[in-house]
Image (cartoon, rainbow, N blue to C red):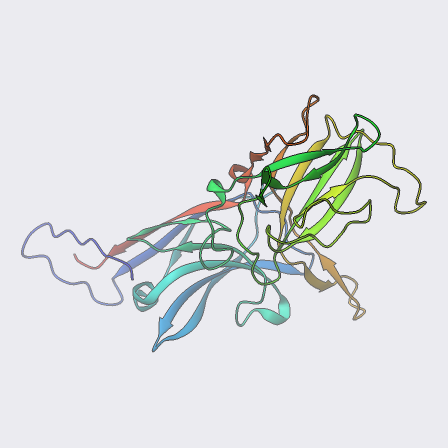
Length: 299
């Protein structure tokens, strides 16, 4: 529920007629990437009516080359403003413009007359992305001093998940990978940091958590002969891909509109097993935005 602050200049001030009342929503977004070729961003008001969640489309919009929507003003019905609790930005195709589809991009919970857009809003991922942390440990080869494994764990004799993220919701998921000597090695995707990821193609697992031992080439079966010291490490949040018909031939293609690097860092050159290392929280680069609501009901 929006809290209205109404200032009366004097006792003679009168209520404006419905046609004269001014209600506006000012919005600024940043960090978005161009949508799929036949899709658009849509702004929705989310509100409850008799305990049934409803949506009112406010506008569909495009962004500039810098991924920004600058100083957009909307005149909204006062009744919608009174009932809405969240503003939602989704990506929609032409056949899903009557109600929000499954691709929610940003949400902003209304508090007083302001709000801040985030993917971590309770309406989407339900966690504070800025407070998330990531700890990893490395594994040494059996017959050499090379570092051949990285696992997102913490602890010593009793290991715990090293990534502090909640279980991914909907079609969202997490993924991790390393880059060594310019080559990317994917470590699989996962929905919960306290369970294994979906890939161990490079070798047997050391822990029941996300990570990888890089022991063999999955294509040839030969020893991979790699040392992970100095490798770049990334953990991403992947939103669900939107599907679209690029050529109008009925064949739909998947379009991932953006990838969000949640954590990034490097494996130290002097990395040793049993030592905990941390990745940097990269959420400051995520899409976001601000909202301001102005209401004028009196003369």
